[in-house]
Image: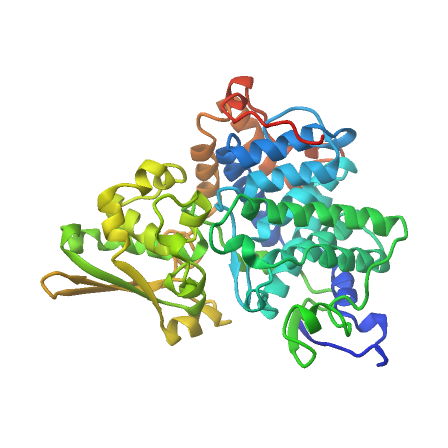
Length: 500
């Protein structure tokens, strides 16, 4: 990897285009290096993972509305939309599938200076691949780039510190991935990256306070913007530049300011794209920093015994966990039994309480209103707080995978004064966890989440096609979706009439 120093440049400075970060990223995207076998295998896993969580969310209102918008834009050759037959305009297919993939917050993750769900790259890159009749090998190449760029930006540039939503790294990554997929020239990809970043920077209020369905829509919007940015760039339209480093650019006014300096690692010429291997999926439908606490709660239940005897619980954890999903957020909504699913998903206090009581976690039942409003749950929930521990913060930001941690130390104080302590650094499904996910686990996750939604024969067909992705020929990528019966679609709330 080569580290690029990125800072603001005054307009009067000499700063050639070939030194811009957007150009460096475009060079990575247009480097036709072979995709390693391990990267290819993991991409297939994540195609399955995305489809799994899309199946589970298919009849939820935000997904149904996004799908209705896409269905208003039929197109040939076009792209597929989860759940239905036919093809649709690629940017709208990317939109609908992006919402389906993100709605339950249940797919892959990468956490470093920033946080991210790199699987958000798949809907837009796959939609363009289907629309343009590309092969499985082309798709694999594009997805390797999308993952690489998003992970590398996340390693280096913190967005949430400046209250910018993390999809600001997704837009450029997806544009770069589409450029790789299509084999575009460096200048075209450069312009698309700049446009995608410019149109996808927004505040992180979407993940603060009362969290709405826009949390699922935001990454889908970034993917849709990436598709449109590539289309404009192909037509010869340019982007604001230098987009990151300009005097009135992203760094100067949205991030660290005119004096900030970022060190962005990118693969050098001829270097393989392997960053997907540093990402991890979720076993539980909850914010990633909740994965280890859920497993820790399940482990501690027997030691604690009678949960009514708990006086207080403090989760000592990283700064990020404390301020984003803990009591350090100062969000009273995180203790509100009437809160939205999206808000409960971002309350580690709620999640730890329910995992302690139930000994399990379910993507629907654990968030059901009747579950959140149980009086014994509310009592336990309000006994839980978080505290930042500098050592957990250091481990969260560590670049050493053997010590990088997203967990917590739980100190449970009983009414008797006894204190029960246990800790868990990473979730069981993490690559270094107690039960790391491999192909069999991804398939099992798909089977579990698709049960009662996707017919068994259609599950078999999709899984067979997904596992053959590298061998799929040009025009065969429409197999990488699933359809469901009209009866299943009828379970979804009817989408009110919009503009389309």
